[in-house]
Length: 476
Image (cartoon, rainbow, N blue to C red):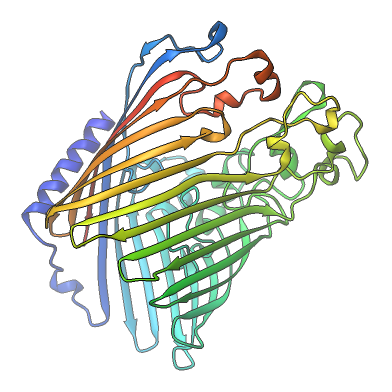
């Protein structure tokens, strides 16, 4: 019923976008007031086939060969965080050098009626509410409140749905000494309203935890090139100063420790994260973007976190290693051939981490053993062609090498179409089908690289995965 309701809402809004352009009522036509908004929803049909599950069915994962039962989700790929529907209205009022920005958001997938989460619900409804002042001839801007705008976010793409560190609750000072340059500092926390009633919660329930950070950032923009760099120091660990390391790991038999995983932004107490973005336009039709992120820099080693500085005989590197840090890289080059045709080359899914992840597992000395993950990278050439003012067709090829750190190789083909519906409304449809080769099921290979097939696009089995996506976006 929920899926059907979301689709009905999508169709109603689609009709509305076609029927009229939004005109503010007289009550909102206030001097200095700007009202904008957007509505986003979508539908995802997710399917797959399994051809070869390897020797002894090692890649079966409870599946039999053949076509798998498809799944249907209310999901907006345009948002990209699993949200099925989002509508928001933003009001900005400015007078002289002062301003107020407030954004109201409706996300039915986030609704819950638990008494101790009422402020969390408010946090999702009013996700931006801050005041700001431009002083010293607008060379300095001070913002205080909830969901302050990102001043030092990335130009291109994101990492786990994050483009910057400073777009959260707190206080921020921006200094703009010359045209194009913005630098400053921000002190804040994630979800201040939700944390007003923080009761600790479950260790992995980040909605009831703290995330206090100190951010320093700088961004320079010009016609030829733009660059941004921001660092965030984690003041309070998501899971508490004393508990973070233990709860970020899963204890295994024999005393081995397996990392729970590093996420973005940083989650480990007293560590830092880094964002770097570069955008270059060497000639008018060409634009090159590079984005880099690293998390949990400066976090403790296993020896420092667990062993009190003592060696642990029989453990990997005697605990003197840091499995918490990770780094990601993304690249894209766009070239406009003419007014209708553009081509691009993207590189993504690149991940760097401690050698513990990549060292093979069958070393003679236990201190040299690791998980044996491989270096992942996805190469994506694409093209887009504007058939007319209202319709653009696209085609993307994805070469997925060592998907997720596995040894699986996939070739993805993604045709797409974008329809302009007028009044700020667009409708996007794409169908991405990926053909997967089988992971290596050789006994000796698996001894060196245990479990890496589980990270692959089809969990080690050859076959296909397919995603059919419909998206509706209306901005006004």
